Length: 213
Image (cartoon, rainbow, N blue to C red):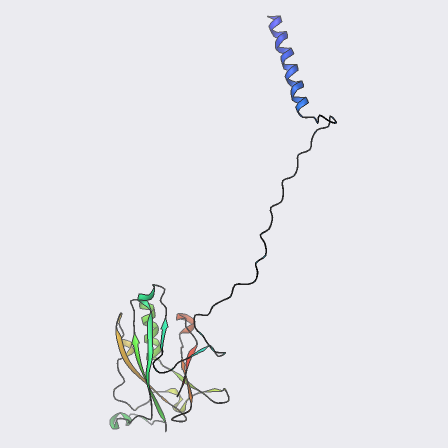
């Protein structure tokens, strides 16, 4: 029994010596220090800021030029099927007013009628945008010296045409409508009218459209 215990003791001493030897440097007998891990390399700097692409080509006033026959589309978050579009189809300076309608109030000397084709999609939000845009239509005149002014009559209701197309409050999804807007202008030709997008801060889109006539 003692021989077995002695043998075990010798084996334990031999094992400890082997461990001690493995932790020393064979050249100098000193313990090797662990090497620090390499620091992660930072990614290379970007070549420059990403270019922000505006969805509409606006001028310095945040407006989009609009000409007869040119459509404007407000994209829908639901995809193309929900897009809302309107097209300026005609401009009529000083149209012949209906006599009975003209009795409803005092009109400015010059009136401009703007004809639109309005197309809704399947998105209730873009449909609401079109309704508010045309039901509460507001205009300004842009003078030749770059000053925006209220048009004659203050942009209020014009009592001229009997047929102004569909009521914007009746707009429904996936339908097409004809709408006519009327406003006073300082001159029947050679001016620029700003059609305000008064809901752009909520719905998006440009601040308005500039129509030269």
